[in-house]
Image 1 (tube, rainbow, N blue to C red):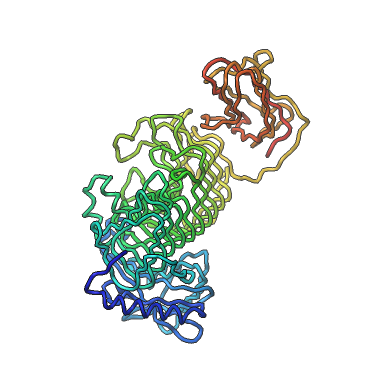
Image 2: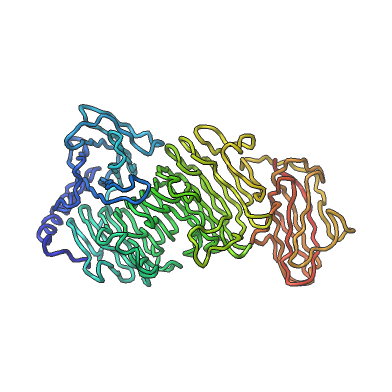
Length: 613
């Protein structure tokens, strides 16, 4: 189990008993206010907080931690984070007091939650709902924010769990690196402040849970920076096998002051976790985690990693979170161009963002809210099938808001390829709002006609309250000619047509006829203007037929531009096969067809019965 240092053993035992009695007494209550660790090493000296339980104000323990910052958040100074967690199942009032002074102004994020706040007698009273994660700036002092997390009540302690009660405790095993056994459950109760990290490499189904704190301040980012990567990554707060299989779950805890990554593989599911590591770069957030829900992050590097879809043989979902960074991207949809695994998708939904992104480190500009960089030696590499929806970004962004780019990896190394090849497709940005402005235009840029982005949808994207449309796109986005299939809505209407044959390669040679499709080759067919299809169509409802193939293979049908690494239809030699489909078309109403055979030819027939516009 996790032993404690001798100097705090008696305090820990007493507080553990007190915590148990408090939890028992509060069982019938809707409010849980947790004790502190018993000593004030990590107590905030800036704020006190009280929680109203329906009859009286209960003092809550407010943690505080500061160190020097090398990120864009108050660089060269010693800013602090101040935070607390309490449990509730109902709306609750919370009173904030500034130590040694009055509160004259207050800003409470996320703004989208419209959290009520009153200033009375130099104090602030907030009304929080369950699951609110409030980022509070008092008297304009954003170098010393207060974070209040209104969590659900703590879960019961599972039978057989390794219980850690209140107290400051340092993991003595392996220099602070705790290595649990398969299926082990570790429970950090309120008031537990554990220094060290969790290494789940080679294990399965480990659980870390409870309202306590896991802190990486046992080490410093500077102190581990010289280690080779395979050693450095072992200092991630939750570290494990990158390629999946550990299937750990993490819930409820607060992770503080990570010296490196906060998560590196290991964990499959994270819920209601709070991450506070904004002072140093390479403190990436939920790296390689498949499912992140109702969590908070304020860190010094990439926060969420939708580009890691497939790492654990699962899709990625990032839902109902609040996050921000002091450096690099909020959503890292891709670096290098090595998609984790083909066939997986990422969904980002219902996210609030507050960030300190800056151009101070550029050019090149290395930070944006949404970021997909593609740099590969293989044109068939790239990223795909990422959906970002209902994302609300506060304030201004000191960089572009969005960057989808084929670009040479800026830090060099063996995977920095020039030219940066790769194709990326199927990106949806829906209901995205930037409260203020971006300093530079967002970018969607391919490298050449065979390496770029296609099927990108910008639906209800607003900057400073203005809807981005085709008419004003150039004011907000820099899009080059190697982007194919850029749309501004997913809400298309279906119009039927009399079934009609568009393409038949058995016919004499022509734009919609022969010759047969050749192995490894692409043909482009312009459909608009044929069979009653008007200009401006977005997609077609069709029946696809392949016949007389001389070898086994597949067809890939795609909008104009580079072909994706997907199959629309597979077939055997000599087989005739048909299938219905809805196909997106390019800007001129065209589709491309690739014949994925090793050799020979196949005949291709396309019949249309409707279109979307």
